[in-house]
Image (cartoon, rainbow, N blue to C red):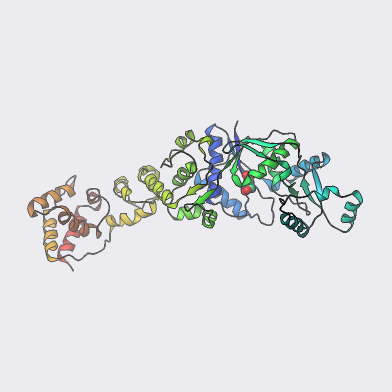
Length: 443
Ligand code: GLU
């Protein structure tokens, strides 16, 4: 069974980039009836906050990306200790004592000589007594994972194809700090093994982590999962933008974006498939294939999202929105305003044209006479608008704008808006007549 995971660190709110990662992992699992795990990466006790954990959960609920199970790294520290001890026994982790300043200096020297800034494994050279001396001085070590320089770091990436790193060109990663706290690398690998993760799909900023983690899987006697790295999300102008990094569900919701619109947009962004207003998730799932993902950065365009949102709103059945509509608005009301809105929030503005009060428009003498005539000729039927305008056309010889616009203005206070044929029955006979008379006689 396919099992995927989404592993946010609760040090902030989800942004559009990690929403996309969550969605794609959910899709990858659900496409084949698999499991999607939410893993809260909260080993960084100082920066992780409970309010962000709650916000992440709430955002996923709003998006309809629900996890089959939830795991928390902070509750699994004993598992990481156990793995660490085993790796230590096997000689795959080693203590290092350099300070941050010493490491920085080494880097500068290497760069100055035109060499790649790879950790020189100085700590491995230390003799037993040198180590003891450091500890006697009260210097606690941090711990590095020892890469095997003879074990190839290669995998067939679901998006990037055959991928390869030379282990000699990578630094042995620090996996544990001197205070015993964990860096991301080892806990994530332990979790992927113990949670039966079959596919790791994440951003391409993790490619070099994957290379290292592949050796960690092997060192722990486990088979590595399938890996896929998607190209990063960039702004329309093609750059990594600060704005995208803080653009989250709240902002989308406030802008009137439906979760279905965000899902439809992000599902296919960066793939060879067209972004379309598809609100049926099974239709999105059936076309989801990693092979359609491109390697070029995926461009996030607000205007495209708005377009998809409008199309999705225009196709929404009354039953799906009725609880969000103004009181008293029925199916006919929804049908009348639906083509005019881009977001559900805009419904209220148009609905006011039915319930009133409407804006007053001042008409010239000729139009007043015309509107008085309209009030007098108004006859109610199944289709009062067409009866009225046909009758007025015959009686006055007006046509086009001269025929329609004064009526629309008198009846709605606006120059444009929903179809008048749909609005009139909603406004009702008495109010229609009253609005025509008011426009013709008062003011
Ligand atoms: N917590 C890590 C992150 O947010 C998870 C990366 C991963 O998917 O392995 O970057």
